[in-house]
Image (tube, rainbow, N blue to C red; front, side, top):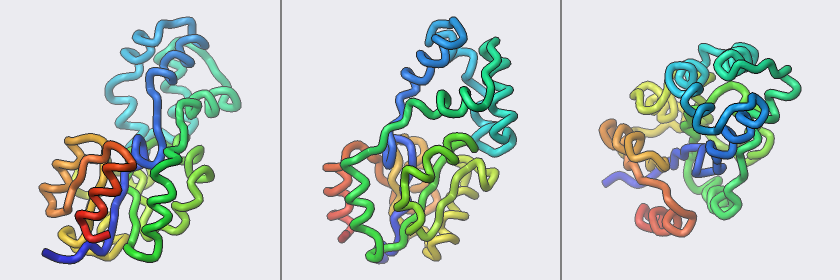
Length: 199
């Protein structure tokens, strides 16, 4: 088996936590809707269009406001839209410890506003060899092309890269392409997974 030369990481619930229930509750409070109603109104094609980069920041604001029947200026909408994130403090030092030992890549389904909000909070990303955000490349997980772009960025063959994601369907997609996919659960489990990879 080839040595692991690259580690590819998801963003949400790996490097940062995202509490969608909190987001829906906060949006609902502003739009005078219940959180479950907000969740229902925001499900479906709009998420994928935003993640694919079809909707830029302003189009995303308009789409969400239209779905919720409320008008929020960007100065209010942007911070509200990203108010459900917290850094995963336990895992970030472990990722820092991989810098210089293996090539690092990010593979994330995200939208323009979340990308703009999170990049400054994660300076370690500047030390990654590849940062592949769906809204910037037009491909979303589990599509093969988003993984191929990440592999090109880190300069590795699939079997030389380990991939960590919190969603089993994305891990399965990576495995189908020949990557070594792992389900991310906790920082402690991540330690054991890295050790098993010789890292």
